Image (cartoon, rainbow, N blue to C red):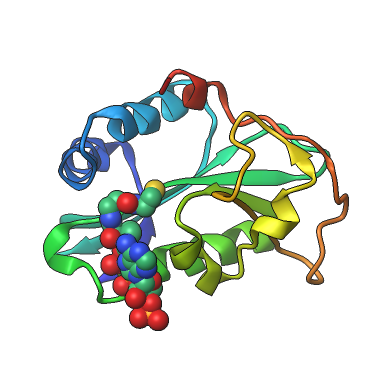
Length: 162
Ligand SMILES: CC(C)(COP(=O)(O)OP(=O)(O)OC[C@H]1O[C@@H](n2cnc3c(N)ncnc32)[C@H](O)[C@@H]1OP(=O)(O)O)[C@@H](O)C(=O)NCCC(=O)NCCS
């Protein structure tokens, strides 16, 4: 298995993966809209024999520092619990760090994202429509976010999810 940036050739396979991984088309539509709006910054796929078995998307957001939003993350059912998502996320975080991004916000299950270093406590001082125990943040440089509070706003595609 290899972790690589997606290309337009992978889009149909990514959509099929997301439709299979989530109960509705919302996440598949989200990814398409992020691309259409040019808000997709790092989109990685896990490829095995040309089959897309996983995907992780990091998108542009408005924040008081250089921040990305991680969502969605998905792995095809037969390949779960084999660290595919971990490799996608760790690879994406490294690419973000290397490109000068300072932090990442994620909305999800704290039990899952905690192991990558995401903390709800770091996100709590930021105001967002998604504020709450499921909104977490991770500092990419020096262990601390450069600014500790303020307003954050996800890309427009997220509000279209309803
Ligand atoms: C959540 C999901 C992406 C995990 O993918 P995965 O490749 O199975 O995850 P990994 O094997 O890398 O697991 C990483 C760690 O998280 C844990 N973990 C995996 N799935 C988990 C879950 N659903 N809840 C809590 N912890 C989970 C694993 O035990 C593992 O910990 P370990 O390394 O200490 O054993 C996958 O189950 C999925 O696609 N689910 C449906 C879509 C979804 O809910 N996406 C997340 C929200 S955007």
